[in-house]
Length: 484
Image (cartoon, rainbow, N blue to C red; front, side):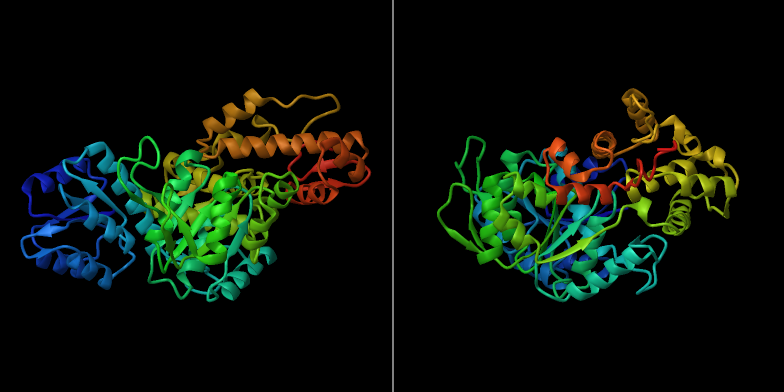
């Protein structure tokens, strides 16, 4: 449970935080002076600090700088009154996470502290490679013994200590964020901030402001100056997930930042110098996007200095069993339901399923199954229906000639399975179905199929390999249940 330390001499502010988090999802500790707060911080390192910039025994940025000197990775949220905005902005430049103006809005407060706690967890929870170092049950683990995963571990080891841009490629749910965190935690910047931004989750009109900041009055809702993430994380690392979703304007600014380590805020003319390491990730085909003109070729080359490719779970063989054992121990520990053994029928069903949502889907299925358990053994009956009976959710290429994919059944099955990645899963299934149909139409001729699809032969070849489609005298997919 995340711990929040509130350092403020106003009883009303401390009470507001106690009230905002009274549902018990955060532990709230308070202090009324800088000395008391710093002692509490040093004694029991919290996940997030909320700090008033005017305290009885300290003013200005002194307390903030002393907190940062103890541990620069802990997000610090400043609470400011009237006339202190300039001071808060200066602190943001020095790495503060955010600042709030009094009076506080509880809804905004909860949302902000939640984001800060998540950022703190990403920095401080180890992303371990168990072949290299021991893996505690509660940790986040890059687990796998297949050849492809061994190459991932070697790649992380090669690049972590180098101050170069890294591009992590892989399908949704394969663990790209874990790889980024492992690179950060084994780098020379491990004692500095790590911020993760999902470019697909932020509206395009807000993403540029989130990254680069803006000046007051830069656009209609810009009521105050904002410091962006690249300025906040000076000296640290930024992870940009789903970089293929960036607009051309944002792409241009990212390119300049990589080249020169400087940028301008929206609506400003001042050049801001920064020092950040960039790790980018995507499940998109950036090479094809450059050919289509949807992604800047020069930016692609800048991002592609060192590439790490994560294999999909369906191509990792016996790693499924390793992951099942690890996550059953972890979820059993978390939920108070230790799992002593996995019934052979359950183990066989888990190995046979194609896992279109990859490790993220496996985690969701196992957590659901542990919650359903009675006793200490995971029986097949505790698994979701679509895992026990794969025909309940048709495989994407399991089509007879002239057959039709049942999208209603697929979507209903994935919702029933508790999917949290349905959009990506549906896109992958659609892509596999289209490719298999076209390749069957061309009798496996890739040149003709690429022409029909309107893509290059190289891109088609990459998709065939990534989607597990095989071509011999007939065309089929690895997770096709029929004869092909």
